[in-house]
Amino acid sequence: MAMESILSDLSVSMTEFKKNPNEALRESGGQAVAVLSHNKPAFYIVPPDRYEAMLEAIDDLHLVRVVKERLKQKGRAIEVSLDELLGGITAKNQHKPTDTGASVGKEVW
Image (tube, rainbow, N blue to C red):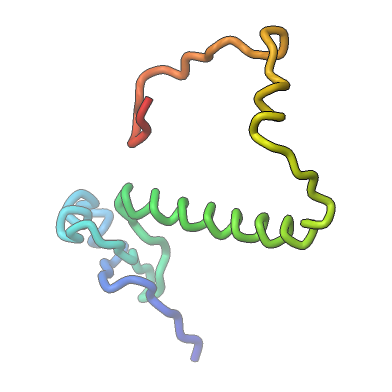
């Protein structure tokens, strides 16, 4: 017998979910919900803020890998000062400001 893990505290059958998906979301209280088909998870519904947090965590894990890899190559690093970096900026190599539009999330301009 193959057993499946359900990776949420809440679950709903596919049949019930199809009848009224908004009710399942409302009753979840912001928690992830496993939607079950034949008593096995078919998919999970996740509130937007939790989904965003999951993507950020995945991105952080990727950055950790990048940092660890770069630390292995620390001997190849070239030390420079901020003054040296800023000294290389000229009117010729500066780009013009770019308008990215109004804020759509938590960013601050």
